[in-house]
Image 1: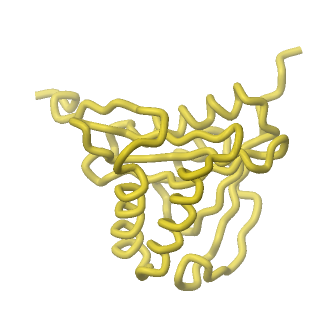
Image 2 (image 1 turned 90 degrees about the vertical axis):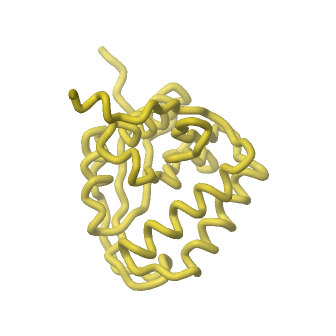
Length: 172
């Protein structure tokens, strides 16, 4: 059997809908508790910030989810509150059931395409050291780590990293 026969069919869906806040928060809480030892404080932070974003999205903002059979299995959002400066990429996560199948790459590409079309000066995101699979995807899309510093806003001290992708330059 080919590897493709084992892949889960996934649709990338733009927009806020029922279950998005809860499921995206749950994915972050569970993943980062296991992967980084974050406690419920991190999950509460995601819940507050994501709920605020979904309740009143800033102009030039969007959220996408990866769905299979109606289940939400991944997400990414662009927060455009800094317009015309860089867009803020947030809440990028993919359920383990989809990892390695291209869903993360497709989510990230939707966000990058949105930002390029909207004319942002670039895209930035904050993450922390050790998330190598995500870093690989970011770098493949033209992001570079431009800042590192210790920080504890995640619930415990980690090496925070700021990645930046400049806007593409127009062809001459």
